[in-house]
Structure formats: C-alpha cells, structure tokens
Amino acid sequence: MRICASSHILDAMRELVRACKAISAETRLRILNIVMVRECSVSEVMQALQISQTRASRNLGALYDAGLLSSRRDGAWVLYSIDEEGLDGHSRELLGALRSMLAKDRVARQDVARLGLAKRSDP
Image (tube, rainbow, N blue to C red; front, side):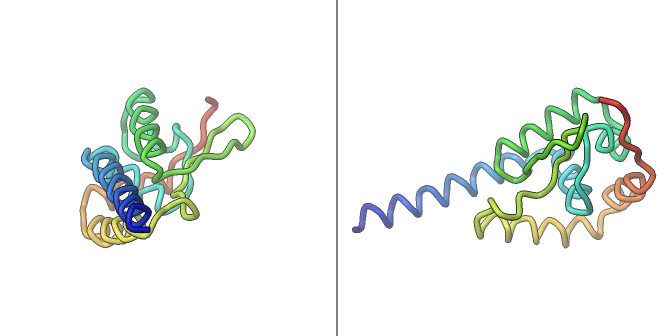
C-alpha cells in the first residue's frame, strides 16, 4: 500500500516539474495568458504576441506536451485552450497564480488587447 502512495506522490511531482519547465519561458507565459482568455489558433497567437509562426507553434507544442493545453480541430484550424479537464490540482493552482500575476503585467495586457483584434488566417 505504501508503494502506491509513494508512486502517486512521485507522479504528482513529475507533473508539477513538467508544468514548471513549460512555463519557464516568457513566450510560453504570454501564450498561456491569452489562451486563458479564449481558445486560439496559431495565427491568433502570432498576431497577439507579434511572433513568428515557428516560434508560436514550437511554444504551443511545449505547453501541449506539458499537459497544460488541449487542442481541437475546427475546419482548417487547430485551436488551443487550457486543458481544464486534464489538469491536476497543482497545475490548476499554478495557472491560477499565473492568471493573477499576469493580470498586473503591462506586456500581458497588451497581448490581450492585440488578441481582441486578431483574426484567424488561413493555415
């Protein structure tokens, strides 16, 4: 029985470490900030953050691989959103703390403002 409890704790720690590594880059924090507002395509992320397609895709992939984002296909677009159902308690708390912190950040607010003007362009 003790082995199972230890295994569960290790799994939770691994998930938290994976989430922390994923948010260790400014671009990924900025992406999380806008995806917390609404689901986004790669082109919307590019426009809101004013970054290249390669950079947007690479960083969305890192957040997806860490289990923070989910994706769904809508016609020609792949849309990314926070993986509300898949998040464990630690990751949920981490995102809540980030949401509070980013709400006070000037760059994060500018990204959200640009997101309001962003259009889904052809992939």
